[in-house]
Image (tube, rainbow, N blue to C red):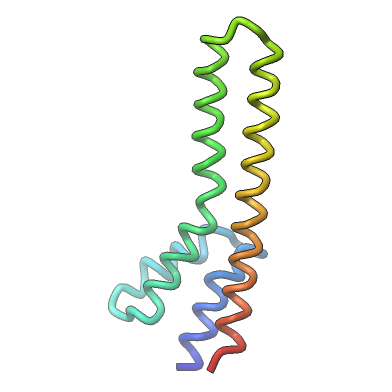
Length: 107
């Protein structure tokens, strides 16, 4: 049980030292142990979420740039999308830190 807590905690806290890659490796290697497999999968998606959102926002910005005639509107859209992305990235980062610490201090 203690070993599972440490691996689960490291899956979330890997956002500090090896984001996305460490939880992906743990997730891939622990298919037979659901106590480690599920938290590693959640940690992987929590850490990958800001990247997915950034790609989506870039696509939205590129497509809207083709259809907007005013450059100022595209600029404001970019500022809003970057602000939303910053909030999502910060939330994801803090969530991963909190969950990693929770796994360490839980019994």
